[in-house]
Length: 419
Image (cartoon, rainbow, N blue to C red; front, side):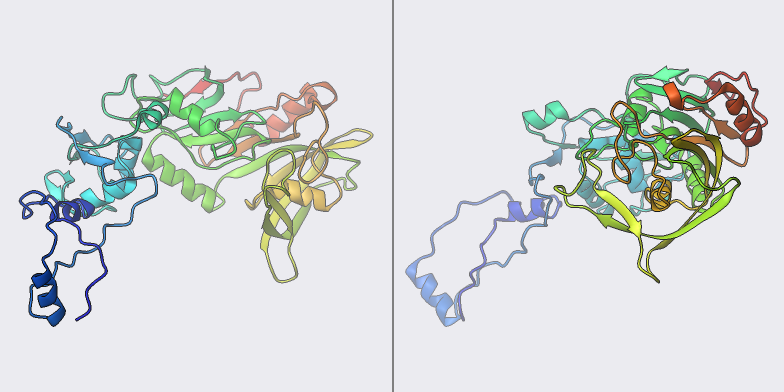
């Protein structure tokens, strides 16, 4: 019988690789060189066969077997708050523990029964209810000194400083670089400035999502954005403060239950006088980094070939005209990537200072703004802070508010707080 070329592992390594305690190994043993007789016996097939062990589990490149280990300090049980109710067990632990334990380790300890919910074993996608107690073994991730300095503590970890975010105890007016337009027990409306990403990425470290985490540090459920705006688009963003509200808002956006209205200054005189429907088939093209323009945007959307792409629909009407520019009111009916910017550019009237689909104007931000979001229970309205020749006349602001959010007082000043 030919000799196996697979490397032999001791029992301790095998047990650690599969995340199980080494009950049967009895410790590790030093390797003993095989004698000539034993090698001859194995060649004849009469001697004892070497143990065949399974290879270790695959791990992400940055995770070593020693990254996750038992800690000496016991972990206090985690109590599911009303804001967190409805989450899957794995989601709950990922939010609570943050970077302390990798997702692969969380899956392993859930599946092996080391995580208990009210004393019982549960699957990773079991949905939690308020008041349930989740017990987690004292697992910690060993980080090198460089990583440990960079990794922030989880925002909603047990024992974090600060009171949970609520309509009564939450922030008022402004946070770290954020203007809060409206806050209720279920969600918060944020006024995003142009130039700030909705979510951070490899090319952009700052974002609305990160600022919300800092603003609501210690909250039972850190607000989660329910939709997004392009980096250079300003306007209203919603973030859910409870998991139940997150699911409700996600369903509303998916079913077109939220009316979205934008303002856009475009190049040139718009030919139409009244409302008109824009409908196009759009295809998305991912650009290589060397093809991306100066603003770092690597996604470009083009008109699709016949029979291909996704339908994009929006209603547009002019509300203010200048010699070389037109202010358009745009009601978005679908939510495609860069939709308004692409559709206006296809008609020869790109948004002013759009560096991807038009031309960048030095010293002028892209003039596209999410003006109004109408939910079933209320409308949220926020005027852009455009200045100079692009500033909105007060009379036009009053007309837009009256037509889009008639229930709002014309003298309303943010923020509002609903008790």
